[in-house]
Image (cartoon, rainbow, N blue to C red):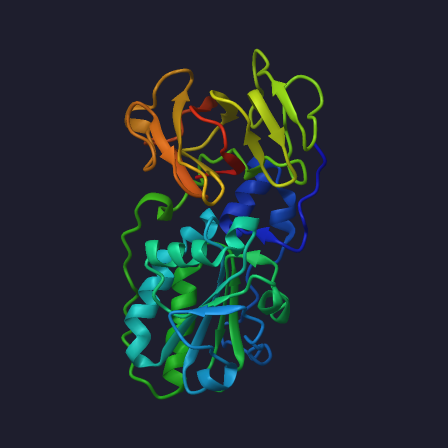
Length: 362
């Protein structure tokens, strides 16, 4: 399948994971990108850019740099299927709650990666389901993203009470450092600050990856960015075709079985019992998928090495591997107690109609 991903729109796993990526996953592009650009004394990095490009606001009337004046602002770029952002969310929520009365204003900027993430009803559902109660600028046209010259999900920018950016961090991690920066900026404004760091109790997709054993990279399935496709023969682009799985997959190869259409952003099941098979090495297997809006739910079943997952099932499957895709989102299909080596994952769909976009691992 044709290679490259759009270089201007990157999920980002952060410094620790990127180092592992370079060493274990071959994702050198991640490791080569800037991680954190901040000194201990939090120097000025320019004025907070405009938020006027938002197409809509959730949980708040429209905010501007001027209306944020007098508060420390956290601007958090996210898109609701991004597992890297989901793993940062418990900290962002906790900061918003703890420091709200001390002068902190968290602003989420939802900039979509996949087409269905532009659907405002999907964004509203995600914000409610994920307990995102702070203001959200819906950035479906990428105008806020461009104003910040941002390139990553997740990305956090901190602005002081005068509206100057003083800190930014791309990717997961650096939570203590980010919170200390928040405390410093609040203290500069004369606000009394509780210097104890927040504690969080993440669950499901919000639990940090097992980076020590992670050897499977994020894998897109549509032909615009897909890699390591292993079904025999070339993929037939944008047209129905019957695919098969080879006798053995190499690590991080994947294949289709049954009648599928390989589209630009996703692969789409055309008949019952379509399967996706992936050879992985990770604790968790997640898949961005679901039926298009208005289509009926689709039942699916997951296996690991040909057997039901049992205790290794994810939050969206039971011990027999059964689950239902009712909307387009990230589904956690496998969570092992620990990674146990290279294993073969399979998901089979009982009905046609699912669009599958991207595997992520943890």
